[in-house]
Image (cartoon, rainbow, N blue to C red):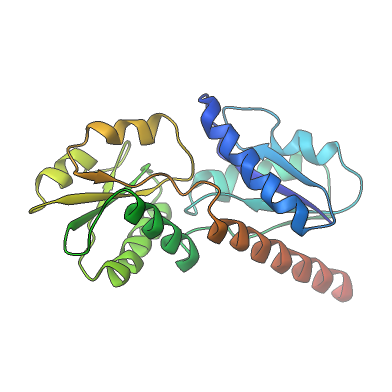
Length: 227
């Protein structure tokens, strides 16, 4: 079954490079095609990719929360393809493996245990997506040994600079972002002492995509046996 990895999409080329890097790391570990699609901004979209392949597919949303794109846009694009042999998996976040990857990026930035930590997310108007961000912050709190408040780059509040300014001592920002782009670039001026890089093509993320793909195959097999 073809694996279709779906990312949000960005006009920044470095963001798309990261998505392609993830796909490139997946290919040697699978003997099936691994294709990239985008839910918004860039092409090809999910509909186009699904119409281009033969046989069934597992669509894995490379999103860190269950927001509008995951719950509405991607399913609509799957339906528009006219394909009935497609399985849509759960998104990647909030999963402990991704929180571990975010923590690794924070450590790489120079954050030290005892420093304050602020989680920075893209932001959303979707209540479920915001709940997923809070769940990720709670998991990161366990890893860092301190309470981790959430903050947002856009759409939702509180905003990152405000939360950083209200945090004591040295402050590290943990980036709950998949790839570099406009949102992550804005964190450079948020006032933090250390800013973790986006999760990117982290080995933990690659392993999680493989796990989601395997779960999608099981789901597809179950449907066929019931049918």
